[in-house]
Amino acid sequence: MLYWFGKIFVGPFFYLIFRPIVRYHERLRSRGPVMYLCNHFSLADAVALTAVCPRTIRYMAKESLFSTPIGNAFFRSLFMVPAGEGGGSRLGPVKRAIAILQEKKAFGIFPEGHRSAVYTEMDAFEKGAAFIALKGNATIIPVYMDPLSWKRMRLRVIVGERIDPEEVKASCPGQKPVDALADRIVDTLATLREEMETDMIPLRLRKKV
Image 1 (cartoon, rainbow, N blue to C red):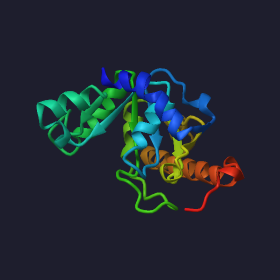
Image 2 (tube, rainbow, N blue to C red):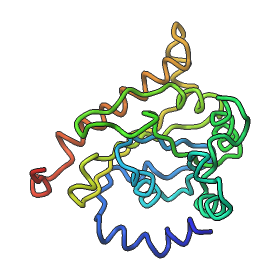
Image 3 (cartoon, rainbow, N blue to C red):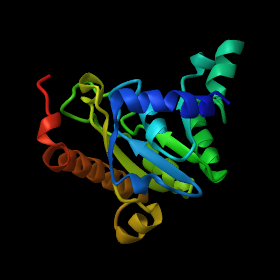
Image 4 (cartoon, rainbow, N blue to C red):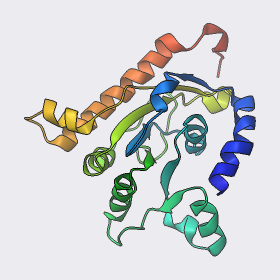
């Protein structure tokens, strides 16, 4: 598979060029159904998350990328699946993501649904990630990636504590489970961003941009 070729042969060059700093790297280790949830600024975010994570991660991609035989073979070899697979309705992507988790695999998702428009802020999160985690009975591992990593040529990542959807559901009996989990996701990513900005980055790494 091209995925493993990249991990084994391209990965070392990625580490050499971007010199990743990953705080709480041990939290990335997992078993069973898990959702790696990350903010999104660059098209390379999925590459970075794949490079630093010990688990094999599946991602969803636009159907148009799979429209040709070559494209279909290429992206599937990267363990990517077309968003429309799993049903022809608007819920098709959600059903496919849930199916991946029910197979006890790892799924990568960017809850903003698109790349952020500015460096300094995360866009509003959609509730789809919370719904998928609940239906897929998956643990969430929140990850915040510095949007300036690619400009600074220094990847910086901070990993949060795991979020158990059932635990969140039980702790908020007066709130809809999806809403409660979505709120927890937003709060967690905001906390990780604040910790990175105020505590994680050595002064010698700070650069004007």
